[in-house]
Image 1 (cartoon, rainbow, N blue to C red):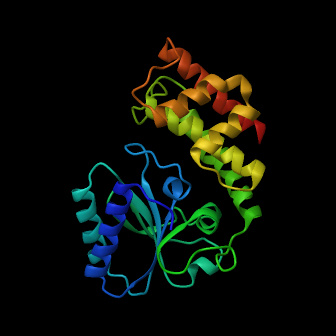
Image 2 (image 1 turned 90 degrees about the vertical axis):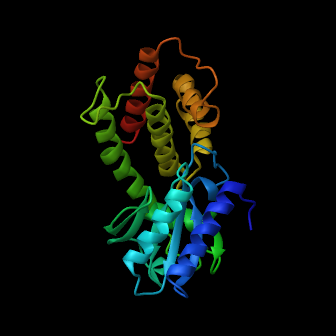
Length: 259
């Protein structure tokens, strides 16, 4: 098994223990995906993403207790993921089911039930319990991953940028804050790399891809990567408005490149 950061190991083992205690005998498999699985976990920046398989019936109140407890014990790190029923990973993703975000359980969510997650699981997933995941039994469809990513780029990311193109949005967020730079720049870079290569990269690998494909935006790409890995370091930008302008330009270029 891949070496895990101490915090990741502590948090995930605590969650597995809570599930075994509150839903005894039901947790069949537990996989790490996302930044942890792709060797790109950044303490204090990254969430812990998981895919779990549980035998029914899943008692929602017990599941909510497990995640509320975990969130209270480890408030600085979100452990987000989905719960599937046995056999679901062998079928194309879709529909709705149980998802957890920031300690809250949503019983009817379509979140993360996508070809992208199935592919990351099969190619990079770390099994903490259950059968090792690979594409011999996980329903990986790379063409579907590319199609999903194209729709995500033109749907979610185009809308996200438009809502924030002016200094403030309806949510009160701006493109001046560090979090928006990281999320926006590395988000579109990751989707673009997935479309081009039919493989889902880590955020760091996505930045490397973007530096090659969009070299004219090297400064904002490097800034986003710095903010993720060294948020206390010095910015190369003298003006936050200049940084905002570069972020909009880069995201527009990526979105247009696959329009």
